[in-house]
Image 1 (cartoon, rainbow, N blue to C red):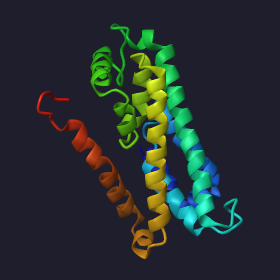
Image 2: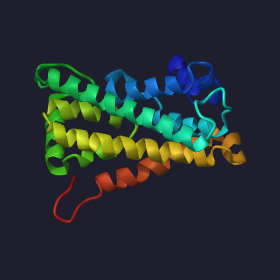
Image 3: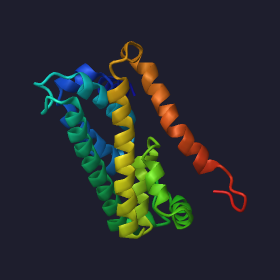
Length: 218
């Protein structure tokens, strides 16, 4: 646990990030978090926000272009591609090994057969919207594309919402970091900023997700 906490602390430290792979490291981590089941603990939201901060304040030697907005667009595109590919890998994993995940005799702490059945019903009712909103839910965004593959979600629908969700998620959070990153309060209270960010980003999604509808509950 101490190792994970130390890793989390390092990954939310802009200086540590820039000294250990820079924004390419962020791109790799985002790919892992959104595509590989063991990446569920990685801090995607804080990393995107911090990346925006780094892009806004970095000198020319750290970023390809002299124009900060060009740098924001450049890295946002790379982050979007990374998270799209991550979800594709997750979908492929679930699709390829669905027979294993559906095995009722299989013992798993994370994906039990009854959970898969519930997820299949959820996808049937919610469609691709489930893929989009999952982008804004830590931990959930790691497993949703895998389950989508397990339940054989339509590939075109999956890709449409995969791409849309990636653009929205990366665009919103990295831009917030870019705009707010040079604010002195944000710089001096980065931990609180990360917590507030996660609450702001996830709360509307969670409320929408669990809000009871007039004719049916989620």
